Amino acid sequence: MKERILRQVGLVLVITLGALAGWMARGWFEAANAVPADAPWTREASPKVAGPMTATTVDVSELLARKPPPIAPVELAVPAEVLAPIATVTPTMMPSENVSEVVAPVVDPGAPRPIIIPVAGVDRSAVRDMFDDGRGDRRHEAIDIMASRGTPVLAADDGVVKKLFTSVGGGLTIYEFDPDERFCYYYAHLDRYADGLREGQRLRRGEIIGYVGSTGNASKDAPHLHFALIRLDADKRWWKGTYVNPYPLLAGPQAR
Ligand SMILES: [Zn+2]
Image 1 (cartoon, helix red, strand yellow):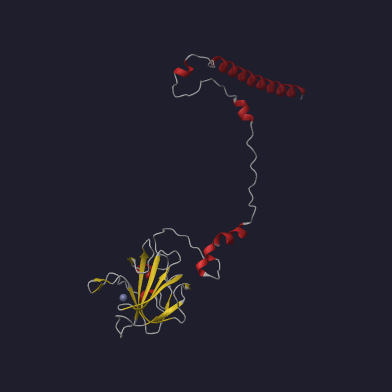
Image 2: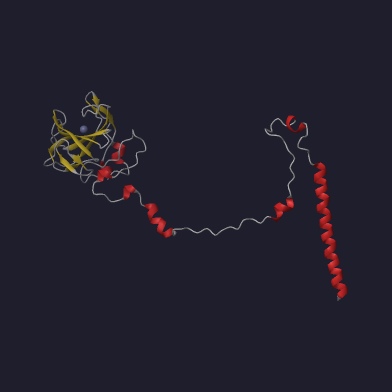
């Protein structure tokens, strides 16, 4: 029994001494191969190295002895079920008394604003693209939305009544500027205006501004709203601008 213990102690001793000898031998080897800091070739021979090359020996045993830092369990300060509804609510979805106060992010300052079909009860599938149709010697540059006389005409977008105007061709018309004054919405052939409508009046999208008719050069048998989208010039005059086809906006998924 005693002999066995002695043998085991001896074995441990041999292993320890062996490890020690190995460590010492490695130390000697490293010391023998260490490059002196003032070696003449350390800089010239390595032009890519900016600083002086000094030989460094790394004590591996020390690195091995280091324990990895303990990984602290990660916990969310706020439970996910609390965060989730907050993340889905955006300012544009917040209810607001005044629709014009809702600020939608403008992706492209030149892009038209989303609009609704400006005639009550008309589905977007009933709207035809007739922007490029000929009207005499010029293009139509508008969309005609057919509806029976007296059907409410709705503001296509938030904005301001810029001009109430009667012309030979358009008959009873409304020029509405959007809140940014980038676009003008033109409504023509109206039978009559909404009661009390006046220039300078602020409008909300969907608000009744008039009624479908056939004033101007429209056929008496085919009352409709002639609707145009005009990109305003820099001087923001209601009678000047570039006609833009509103069909993609009216027929798109955003139209109602
Ligand atoms: Zn027309």
